[in-house]
Image (cartoon, rainbow, N blue to C red; front, side):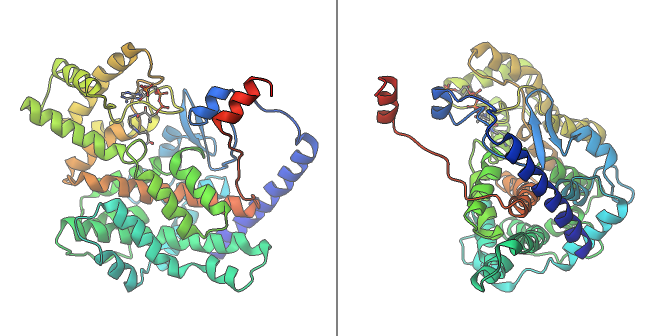
Length: 435
Ligand code: AMX
């Protein structure tokens, strides 16, 4: 643990010094203009955040520290006998800014294994909720129950120096990441498998062990989890889950409080919940059409019906991206390799052929292409994980990697409390009248 923490601090101090110089020289440089419409329309296109872990290009998709998803699938270390990247490696890359060696990844696997113990009161708190409670609610309650373990809040109460904030946030982030798979798997087995829980396997990697604890022993499901945990981890800083975690963390709320806040945002249907909505939408379509393999014409009719009902087609569109999401493509490649004949997966591909031209023809949708959520559910169903309400929890476990790596950076760079200015429409009217 010491090694990675020291490396992080070294990188953090170096960048903090660079930023100081940069602001001294260029602090008053203008980097953009803001139009009134942007203020009213979700701040789209306004640059207002620094997030070091990843950067989104509207055409190319996400790059983590400069590496695209196909590059990561090639360059990051793999599990023995596997071909998909290990999420430990991606976390190392986001945190340190350099590709890890096999030894770095092995080290992180060991650190997370050693820190993965979840105290009993967390399970008892989850048990206090009705089993019917949405898995995302159970997940957030579990994270909040775990907040009793926060080093940051204990050290802050004891008068920790400002200089040490990063250190406590780092420790909390590592503990949280190590423990989340156990909490998530507990919720899964509680809600869907009669509370028949599976003990962790200390010989497995982080994602492999997560698959194991959920009850999936198939080697290719473990590979899917490794890929899934990598591609959902981060999508620069402005998305709801990343931005919320960062914002709440800026109040010096500890990583448990900050992550729980971000996860509440991920639970929204326009954000992380879209993956459950996609599979629900496909199931409803199959039921209505009474076929497992709807034709392109049938899909097109169903899409039109969805739109006429005033609903969005889930899994399509994006606030920033303007092309097919490379995270969709990575999952399509996984599907082509492991389950090319699966009818549900084929329906996802058929929807991909059919939906974009229809959305495009409406003229108002900025991105008619699929996002990450359009594919993930069908792959999970293939392995028997049909409980689609749970899918956003998987997304959340993965997203913790990115938002917590970023939170470590926020504190090592000493970012201040976030507090943008808001206005009233009355004030806008006065401005426009020149008052
Ligand atoms: N189906 C139908 N209409 C859509 C649409 C879709 N998939 N995507 C966008 N639109 C509509 C919007 O609702 C909006 O309509 P309005 O003007 O009548 O209100 C119009 O097209 C313009 O929207 P936009 O500028 O293209 O998108 P946005 O930045 O406002 O929203 C997003 C982006 C993702 C919320 C939107 O595309 C959407 O609702 N998609 C479906 C839900 C989804 O897949 N979300 C997951 C996103 C990825 C993630 O966070 N996991």
